[in-house]
Image (cartoon, rainbow, N blue to C red; front, side, top):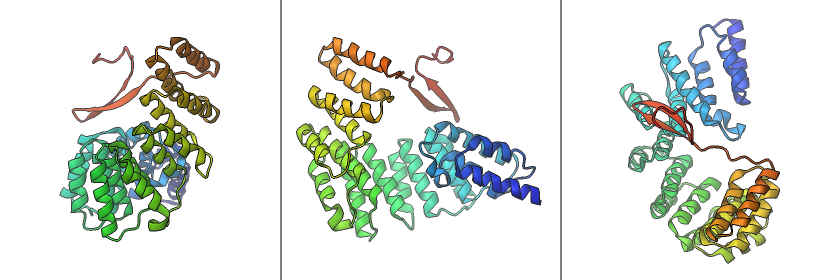
Length: 344
């Protein structure tokens, strides 16, 4: 790679780190013969993997760009390495592309690429996000070495799918293997307890955070505790937790309380939660919709209209829902109410 090409590759890396993918891609296209490192830089940034982790919420559309870029790389006959495959697998996880993610797994096995802990963790995450918990767990138990991130991915997988008891079992296995939980570990374990209704187990873990693991509870842990209590119908305790926590509740905490109020029909708590949410996130549609649903369930349609007017006054528009669906190896995006969709 010549001097000019080296400078361009350095600029690609710079803009990728700052999440400016438009400029990153433009400069990348100026490189006549990009090497593997440069390809990996673009792929990793598109996939939103650690290189771009500081960029906030990552547009899922960038993950599609990662897959398209990988196909370009293949056409250029550049042999991928483990870092390439982590980016590709992460992109598949983000858009739910199970078939392509499984292909990437198979490709690594056939081409004797190293199945290190980073690759294994990305595969666990991909299978979890695609709903294949058995495949994720098989990958987990076969890994010769597991770190905290790997355990977090598996615990979180069981948690979000409602298998709280299995999440606790993996958490206990983590303790047996001598690995120290981190902030994320506690969040995903509490999430598992919340989704499975394991209130006492979750309470016990929360209370032992500082003494057993040296982790001081942060706002995200209190949000999990509020969700744990709220889902179990213990709304007064959840509300008390919000008002007595040692830091200022953020939007996630209030939204957990609002969601619990909707499920259990507590209008008073729901109104308090929304009032605080509007101050923190005046343009977030879902907050208004949750309270509107509470009113609708109680046949208070005048209040439903009032919430709709409040949305209009605050210039809040409800964005149409969308999802990515993999069909015959291709990925399609569907928008709610899109009349141009050929399958509708």
